[in-house]
Image 1 (tube, one colour):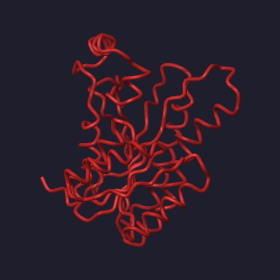
Image 2 (spheres, helix red, strand yellow):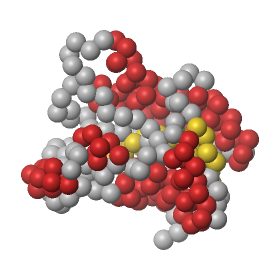
Image 3 (cartoon, helix red, strand yellow):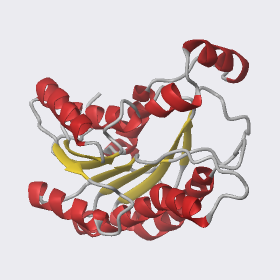
Length: 253
């Protein structure tokens, strides 16, 4: 299926690790989009650039940046505009789990909110002018559960993203710009493999007990949905919260 992304310009954050952002960047490049890949770890970005260029013949733009820095959003936007002249697609994939004790200091909460909410808002607002001028745009936020099993600052930040995205969808829809949130379940990302569910035995036991389909997902399972949502075929979907979790989420509403 041709998703109609040939020549579109996409920014994908959180693209350095072997996880969701990397898979999304690769899939969009496979569909013919020009991709700007953004993260802090330059070595991994250069590896991804080489992989995509060898496979597609289309070399991504590498932007090494810390999204929590106040000037990062405008700097990223300006580099992409200089390279490609526009921004059609933004995938906010950078983020990280931040479980905190009840007595955690403000600094830890501030860092979690800066990464998981403020950076998303800043980068989105920085590129909106380009999308609105072109009367076409797609924004995807890779978020997280609103059913927290513990106190985790990232859950609070992601809930803020959900509310903000719903609100802004009401303002930009008539200009042909959509915004949606995608909630991954247990996806085999770097965080899952190294910190949250280390070890194959741990993952198998969790999946048998909690995931109806019986296994953890691959980053490509999320990338498949994102590629559709950023395409012209998804023009009538906006302001939505969509789970990719193998049935892990229990609520029917």
